[in-house]
Image (tube, rainbow, N blue to C red; front, side, top):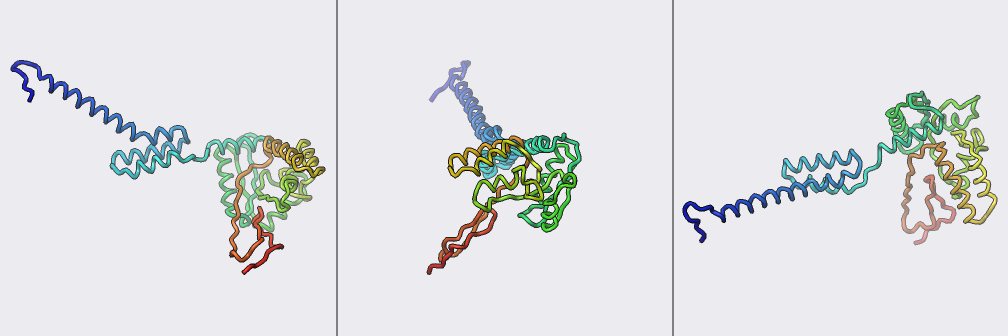
Length: 271
């Protein structure tokens, strides 16, 4: 037992008071530091992600429900898409593509019912472009009308500034994947270079790819073409869908190809 003499300072009480104060402050700092961990992690991500994580942590703090803190921590580790950068790239691509500045009126054609959510995707892109200052006028058409009109010869110029189209390599060869839409000799109505894009670099690279059977040389040629296409930005590349095919195990030698169809010429049924 420790008893302080009359008139003397209770050293033990003072020491314990200091220890208690330091402990409370230390544990408080540790608690709030730990509580803010999700926000610190999310701070390096996107603004929207940071705000959602901060809100979850705030709810957890006032409700004492740890599930909100755990949700915030898990969300902090998820990489959110760069929506702001996406809008900026769309705006920059359109400027380079059409030689216009934000505020210019653009006519945009989109199909309705041909692709999965084609109309919704087109309207979303139009909305993004409006947000960065373009005046977008949308024209929606059912597919038969749409493909007939975008494939017409310009008279004297195309009636649209932007048009939506999906393209896949039905031939399973890179030549058609690029040539059908970027070769300068494939302007409508010959094919679907709907941007009326012309680049000597791309034309020469695609020609080189056609003139050899050497896989390494062809790959180099298409690499040059793709790099130039990305720099010139005649298209805004939006979606790359994945097609999934399902079949019974007895059905063999059936292959799903990029545009969603299936090759069945070698199909067999084994029981």
